[in-house]
Image (cartoon, rainbow, N blue to C red):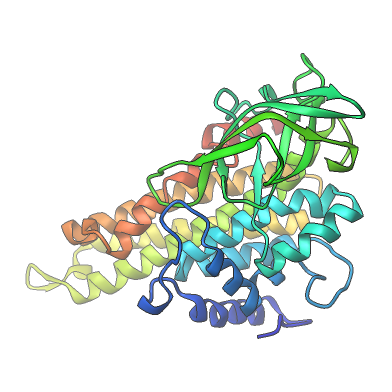
Length: 379
């Protein structure tokens, strides 16, 4: 199925839903083919075949110029996929997060080598920023890039890394100038088979592909630098400014799925002589869930529009969108579980799945506390 051209957002959203129906991993015949916590390469190839991954990387399908997807389209992709299949949504999002530093800031050689492969699902990408002692304080990176010949050798560790240790290439952020905080970080494109790079998977609450990486003298050269030496923090923040609103879109999609499940259950379930939804406390809870979800959606797409228009408040609005949408999704999913009762905690129930999925977005790509700090700084 080709990517629609010159369509409205509504038509694009309908196209996403049609594609998502073809790859729904909750169906028995399309269940995840990889073990929990490892990259599902078959799913990535399927995302490429139906057009969802190419939609994330405009220009790859028609050999046109490689360019960013509009932030609004990225949010539509993530919201609509999240309603149907969080496994597929996360696979698509991690592929984008690992590749976009190259798309936005890489050399032509890096872009032509890796972006089309990532867009097809043939190559797996990863974004390697977080370290054991540098999470929320990303400027405190300790992975050392020690001068060696005309390049560097990388020494240290990364952890909670998307698609590690299975990725084919990593965007790695390392300290090239000690003692300079964010001004001394350089981004590198490091192939996954580079000598000295090893890793192991991590077992998470929700079994997505995340892992730990060890760099033991991994050699990188000037051709591996993404952007400009010592300005890698700017590379990372540029990518995160685009992806943070889309994390909010992912959260809105999950909230929407939980709200739909709660409405259906409370309509069908009888209690105290009538449908559960007839109880005022239940009706008011549903009203609160619906209102917060819609408010989160509006904030997400406002932030996306700010990014697409090149507005002055991209970082501020991205932080607001991620903060409010992820906190809202946590509330809505929890409220839906409460309305369902014990059945929602049964393994395999949609809400049991969403309850595990919804917790991490409040932490990754900047925890809620960091988003509040960003918002306060911009006030």
